[in-house]
Image (cartoon, rainbow, N blue to C red; front, side, top):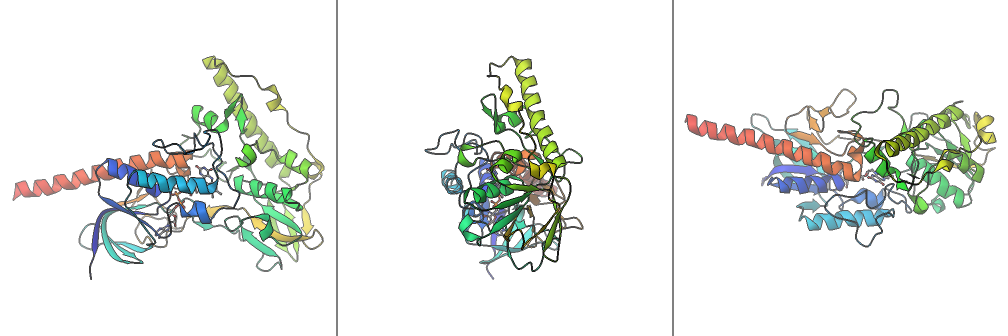
Length: 422
Ligand SMILES: Cc1cc2nc3c(=O)[nH]c(=O)nc-3n(C[C@H](O)[C@H](O)[C@H](O)COP(=O)(O)OP(=O)(O)OC[C@H]3O[C@@H](n4cnc5c(N)ncnc54)[C@H](O)[C@@H]3O)c2cc1C
C-alpha cells in the first residue's frame, strides 16, 4: 500500500486551515491541508441565505488582504466571505486538497508520528493540526420534543422564511443567530416568539466607531477567559441591514413576543423560565458597561469623538416583559415551527488520540494538545475571546506554527546529536 508522507497535516480548509497554511509556509514547514468539501464550505452551505458578517470588512479579515471591491465599513455577505478565503488561499499558494475527508488519525506505535486514514487512502504525518471548526455539531437541547407534530430545525439548517410552514414560529436562543433569524422572520410577516436567555449585547457603534473597534481598543477581544459565571452567556450582535444594535425591547415593539429561557415541553405546552426581565437587565448592564468603558477611554486619552448621550436611552419594558408568558400551548398559539438557535459543539470522532477529557472536550493549552504533535485551532476561547473569529484565528495559527517549528528544531537536534555520538 502506497503511504503518502506529510510533515504537517492540517485537517479542515476553512479560515483556520488557510491561516495555518500561511504561517506554516512562512516558517518553511512542509504541509498539506485536507478539506472534505470546498474551501470555507461552512460559510457557503451551513449558514442562512441573508447572513452577513457580524463585523465590518476592515475588521473581520486576515491582515494580509482586504476584501476586494468592498467598503471597509460594510458587512460582507457569506458568499463574499467564502470567496475571500478562496482568493486568500490562492494568494498564498496554500497546498489545499479539497474533497478529501480525514476519517481516522492515530498515533503510530513504536515510531513517531501519526497514521491518517482519509477517504482517498492512508497518510503518515509528524504533526496534525485539527482545524475542523469551532461550530461542528449543532446542539439540540435535551428538552427538544421528539415529536411535537411541528417542524423543528437548528439554525444551521435555516435558510430563509420560505422554508418554514405557514403559522407562528418559536425561535429558541437569542444570540447573534437567533436574534437575526427572528428579525428576518418577523419582517417576512410571521408571528415570532423569541426565547431570550442570558446575553451580552454591545452597542453596534458608539461615538462614531463600531463595537469591533471598541472591543479591540478596550482589550476585550484579548480576554483570555470568560468571566466566572458568564460561561453560558452568548453575544447578540448583527451586521444585517447595515448593522444595528440588538435591542430586544424594540424588537418587541415591532411585534416579536419575547419569552424567557425555554425550560420544557409537555403535552403540546412549552414552559419558559421567569427570567426574561433579568436577562434583559443583564444585557443592558453589559451594553452600559461598554459605553462607560468607552467614555472613560475617551476621557483618559482625550480623543476627539462626538458625544452620544442618546445611546443611554433604553426603551420602557413592553408588556411581554412586565407580564411575561410562562407557558404556551403550541397549537393554540398557532406555532407551526421551532428554530433552535442553541449553538454548537465540537465533534472529533475522527481524532483517536489522547487529547480529550471524559466529556470528549479537547485538552489543550493555547491549542497545544495533551497528545504531543496534535494541535487544535479555531476553537472558541482557544487562547482568547477572538480565537474563533476570522481575525483572531490568524494570530493563534501563527503561535501554533511557531510551536511546530520549535518541535522540529528539537527533533533536528536529536538527529544531529545521534550522528555525533556515532
Ligand atoms: C452563523 C455564524 C456567523 C458567524 N459570523 C462570524 C463573523 O461575522 N465574523 C467572524 O469572525 N466569525 C463569525 N463566525 C465564527 C467563525 O468565523 C466561523 O464559524 C468560521 O466558519 C470558523 O472557521 P474555521 O475554519 O475555524 O471552521 P470551519 O469554517 O467550520 O471550517 C472547518 C472545515 O473543516 C472541514 N472538515 C471538518 N471535518 C473534516 C474532516 N474530518 N476532514 C476534512 N475536512 C473536514 C469542514 O468541511 C470545514 O470546511 C460565525 C459563525 C456562525 C455559526
